[in-house]
Amino acid sequence: MKLSKFKQSENILFILFLLPAFFFIVIAQFYPLLYSFYISFTKWSLIKWKPIALVGLSNYQRVLQDSLFKHAFKISLIFACITTPVELVIGFLLAYMITGERKIYKITRTILVIPMTIAPVAVGTIWRMLLNTRAGLINYLLQKIGINGPNWLATPSTAFFSILIVDIWEWTPFAMIIFVAALSSIPVDLFSAAQIDGASRWQILRYITLPLIAPITVLIVLFRFIDSILVIDIIYTTTYGGPGFSTNVITFHIYKQALKYFNITYAAAASWILQIFCLLVAIVLLMCSGKLQEKI
Amino acid sequence: MKKIYPKQKEFIFLLIKGAIIILGTLAVLVPFIYLFLNSIKPEFEFLSVPPKLFPSRIMTKYYSSLLASGSETLKFLFNSLLVTGATTILAVFGGALAAYSLSHLRVSPKTISIIIFSILLVRFYPKITTVIPYFILMKKFHLLDTLISIIIAHVSITVPFVVLLMMSFFREIPPSIEESAKLDGCNVWQVFCKIVLPLSSPGLATSAVLTAIISWNEFLIASSLASVNAKTLPIAVSSFITDKGILWGPMSAMTTLIVIPIVLFTLLLQKYLVRGLTLGAVK
Image 1: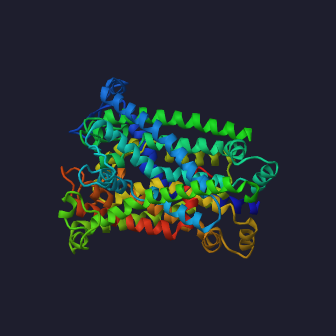
Image 2: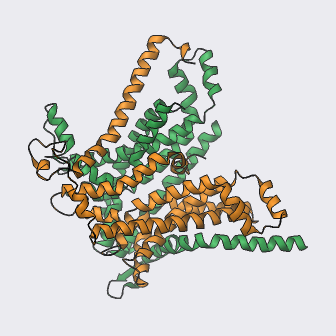
């Protein structure tokens, strides 16, 4: 009896331990999340700075009929569908080459990780300089081999291509270090056994390594796909959505609607559509990863 | 191990490997070298035809004017340091406490996994959803353009990472150590501060590094809240963009300022960083 009372008071203490963390999460995450859900069904008064009427689904209707929203969503989808596989392939290739305990591998890994740790805004400004038409390094190097470099950030097609390059440069390291972690966790015995049986490097990769890292690969796809859909910082600092609307990705579109034009309810509805989309993607991919894990 | 393959094939493989490593390293390093060179180059050399890559003379003008006493940038630098420092302390401490609680709380495992799931959720949903209502909330409290509003938001996005990280570190502490401390008369709080925290200092370091990097780099939330006084460095550097032309010198100097602490962090604290960066994807 005495013991259980002691344990109970201990439990209350543990609940108290949770409070500081929950205070922050509730104020800045859960409450805003619910509130944005609520205002997505209302009409917002900019003068009173609060919702003044419930309007049902009309905000959602407005968003879904908006050609700019559809366009932005499409751009983000294309963006994510290109960057994710490219980052995955290059990331794996690099990881495959530099997994191991050798000093040279460790140093290379440390250097290669840098792009993902620095501020995305800084990545944007660095690439804005690199891609500058007249004075940028890229066009300078192209000139050296006799090519007249394009107006990277100033024409729609090359601007979109540019933001792909920037995202790939920044986030391939993420795929890489996770692959490195996954590859190092495969028991070495497995490889040596296969080698003794006469398996070639390619066969080992195809029949041992790849199946073993498949579940993790799906997780990397999940992280990279969703983060690519939600990209904003590098867009803000390289193209600012332009030229025209050629790089007007979905998060940037919502950001402008909310904080530049104060289209609060439109932005809330749009962000909830995005929210549901991301949630569905996450559920599907997590289930895939689970299935693959079971197979092993 | 290698001798099993024929020598020639092995040589070609090594060659490819070397080429990939060198290419990868160059692709990462060259932009940084270029950035740094730009920050010490005289103005006219950006615009000369063909552009000069290496400065004819080194000048620190941009840095000295950015960091002159009373300058805006100095204020933003100070803001950034304050936000990052406060966020790191609050998130690591709050997160460690919560993680310790979650790994000892006597409730059904289901409740715990629901809590952990909702923590994970914060990682995956579009931050833009919360940015708008949080902006409205802060406006109501008259906290727009203050560092406090940014710090609260930064803690809220980093604390989930700390909880998950610290739980994985706490799991490695043998329960017998805590039990014997309790038998010696320590209460829960003492066990936590005197036994558990010191034993998991690598975890605290990892959490601190990760939190500091996220907060130092964060743009979306800070840019929605800070209009004049509470700007952090990433917001300040983004304001170079709306101008028609590029102010090459100041922009590269300020970008270098943002980048340098993080690059040093990455190089020196690599050991702690990796477990933090792979969090959530690799257990």
